[in-house]
Image (cartoon, rainbow, N blue to C red):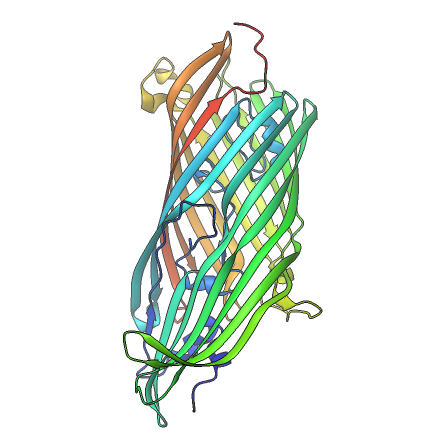
Length: 465
């Protein structure tokens, strides 16, 4: 039969050329999944996730999201700093963190008057950090790594078979299980590393659906999975200057070849308007082994904190990060012995800054306040990234502002001079992705992350009882 070639719409970048023609309509219908298990999940509802490996995350909880995902040069005794594994030595307790997220998107193509909202809710972060001794710490974490979540359709008519629809769908994603360890050979320097096991599967489908049931429609589905390790490392230098604590940090991620597999199926079906009735398998490729190449990254960060005498938290912390991810190194799936084609991606550059403060220690009039809001930690953050997402050769700019807070649930003294606390953590973010062109997809989104941090002392002996 005569049908539209599947390859003609493999890239969402071509949709902008279609919607300019009269009679075309684009519908963005994106899935929702609530995931709370250890398997890969769909945590993206962005059409931009059709590109490359999908929408990526840092794999961090609300404590760091509220600071604009900043933390390479940050030290904190209560949280797990996945952004720089050298920071594991800064923990003073065994720490358990977990959180979930809710995201809401507004997708627009301004020149076409297209406007649609979507949302999803999912498991966001689980981590266990521990301190074996004053000079060595580590962490185990589980979090999303990358995901696809889109449903994009384009309708048109043909002189041969009438009305048809081309539909591109994506779901699934990859999670990361991280094992990290850090040592502090001297008081002013710490070094750490992460081994990240990336696992999961993404499913992409491309369908040409013909409205007239006398003609056969066609579907092609590709399942791509990853199961391999990648590594990153970091360093922190820190010291005191009077009542201030200064920190400088750096991180490097190896990226590189990842073991991958892929299954491709192509079949024809009859479209009833409700269900698909398969007719014939046109192509089926059993699991094919191969590789995917993940990009390397480099990051630098600085931090300055105002200490408070005999208090376990700082009056305030200011941190700033700069990170480069070499997306031009990324390669999609290639069977063993073959080389994947060059991608159109360019390196992304991300700058972010965050502020953490406790009102009771910042405002002199509140120094004796003991109410919950006065002793809570508040976070502000902002970030700007250019380069990860594209529409044609034009790079998208992602801008985001964040607010967060940690409410202490339990304060308890372990020994004279030792205090710890568990926290309820909340972060909210408001962002936009766009390249400024009215005929291109524009995204506006907001996030809410809610989690809890529990602290206790394991592995360490008390000096006093």
